[in-house]
Amino acid sequence: MANRSLLSSCNNTLSLIFLFLIITISSSSSMAETDSSVPASVSAPIEEEATVHIVYTDRPQHEELEDYHIRTLSSVLGSEEAAKGALLYTYKHAACGFSAKLTPKQVEQLSKQPGVLQVVKDGTMRLHDSPAKLHTF
Image 1: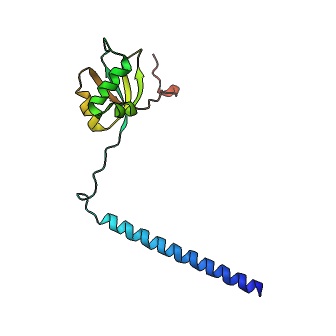
Image 2: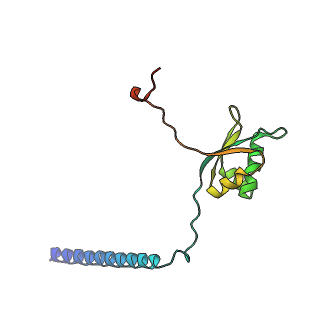
Image 3: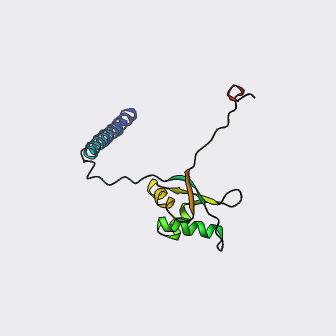
C-alpha cells in the first residue's frame, strides 16, 4: 500500500515537472517569434562596443600627465568620471600617452583633439617562435 502511494506521488510530481517544461518551452518560443517580428528600424539602436586603444599624446608642459590624459578624454566622453572609468593605463617613459576603452566614434573624436598624435587599436602581437620563420642572414 505504501509503495502504491509513493508511486502515485512520484507520478504527480513528474506530471507537474513535465507540464512546467512544456509551458516554459512554448512561452520562450513565442517570445522568440515576437522579437524576430520587430523590424530593425523600430528596435533600439545597438551601441558600438568599446575596445582598448592606445592614445599617443604630446607631453604636457605645465600639467601632471594623468590629469592631462583625463582632461583630454573628458572632452570626448563628457565627464571626468567617464574619463576615469575608461582610462586603463598612463604611459610615462618610452612614450607619452594612455590606453582607454573607446568606441569607434570616440576614437574619431579623440583623434581630432589638440595634443593627440595618434590613436591605435590595441592588439596582441606574437613573436615568431619557429626557426623556420626566422630570416637567416
